[in-house]
Image 1 (tube, rainbow, N blue to C red):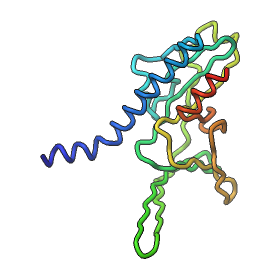
Image 2 (image 1 turned 45 degrees about the vertical axis):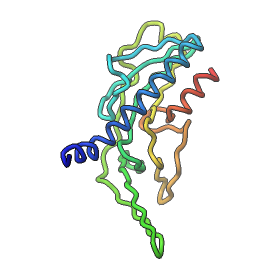
Image 3 (image 1 turned 90 degrees about the vertical axis):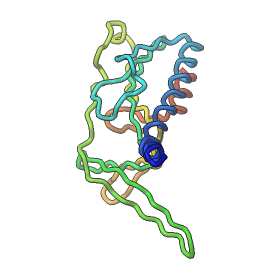
Length: 179
């Protein structure tokens, strides 16, 4: 009983990613089928794309555009802050309520920003189309910021992070439907 409880506690973030990605998989394929787009995965289990993986996880070809998609996940509800020196760190939030509300932010160690290869396994037909690099954050994080001098500038869907245009699953499906 205790072992099952411990397993559930430690497995929760990964189960959350799995079910969110499964939902994204279904939405993307329905949207692509409805709009007659073609999906080219770069590996068999593309929807398990890792943050540490360096290559794009899939390509979506529309009539005149190719989307190179790299999946990026937030295991827990955390924030990300990109510093000016090409580094980033994650933030964990802890809120306590009671007599007075206390909010704590814990920062991780700074890491260099990853450089992703969005042009791996390119097909010849991709070179003739407009090429859009997409960093698909699924599940999404609480906040994404870029530091500019001493100001924190929030990043939203459509802004650039780690070489790709940021999208959540929902905003990317909307962008595909507008295409």
